[in-house]
Amino acid sequence: MHSKRHSLVALTQGADVPSTRFRWAQYTEYLSTSGFDVSEFPSYFGAYSPVSKIKRPAWLAAAILENLPRVLRSNQYDLRFVQRNLTATLLTWEPILRPPFVFDVDDAIFLGQRGASADRIARSASVIICGNSFLANYFTKHGNVEVLPTAVDTQRFKPRLLSAPVKQIIGWTGSSSGFKYLHSIEPALKIVLSKHSNAVFKVVSDKKPFFKLLPTSQVCYEPWSEDREVDVLHEFTVGIMPLENDLWARGKCSFKMLTYMASGLPVVVSPVGMNAEVLKLGMCGYAANSTTDWVEALSSLLNDSLLVDRMGAAGRNITETFFSRAVIAPKLTKLLKAQL
Image (cartoon, rainbow, N blue to C red; front, side, top):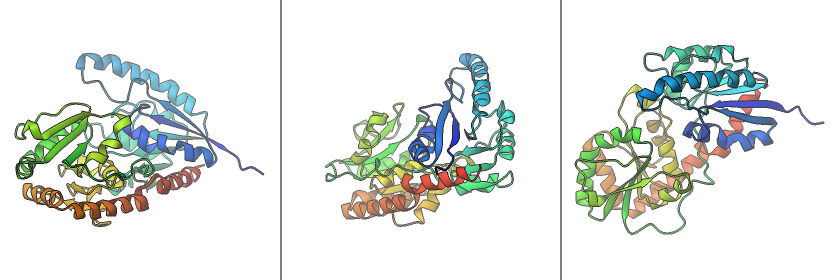
């Protein structure tokens, strides 16, 4: 006798939004083979306001109007998977979501003037799925909390097969909103690049960065594309993830760091929040707090290819053991079934 299949729908922030891709879309195939009939209602207008202030009132009206039918349609399903707030930091139609629903949080969305809206949604959810322990510690006062890291598809993000490129590349990938973190370590990068004339700092992002201190001949930019997001990591010698030590950074789920590690790269990261927790799992790279730390860590890796290989292999092992899609997908499935 076949067990009953359950209908599951995700209310996501947009089909191409990173949190949708990595905290929902990459699990749908597994969920489908595990007894769920899976659907998604992505936001067409997007959950966050446009940069242009002139366009914001029209966007806000459209986004709020769009979300009412999304919620009403979702109420016909057995279970709802809700990614953050439906519209930016506002509480809109979430109170009419039919229980049970799960509330998925992968950023410190409770910070800021309207952070209480996230608290309200969390109190109505049957479970709050948090991307790391910092977020879980906050939301535990509002309801049932489970920690599920953002998984890496280790079948897709994997080490390069060929030998390392001749040119040494310090690499960073991410949204241009994170450029402030790169500017904070610019003095360190300047010293490293001056010491290593064969080294290049490569940025892969939606916009081209501008640096005041770095020689243009040693800075390389590539527009981000999904087609190249894996191959470009194979060009890196080391992956970096600088952060500021603030509450917002502590809410980050270290996904950038984990994709580097899955690709067999050593990492140099700010030991903030989850980054510090990942570093404790094995010798996959270095923590860097100061300019001196960044210079010493990057220089030691650029000077020692065996160290690069050793730390890269350790990082790959950590991601496969703790953070791979193969490990996280069954946990998510079990968690969702428990809500029915």
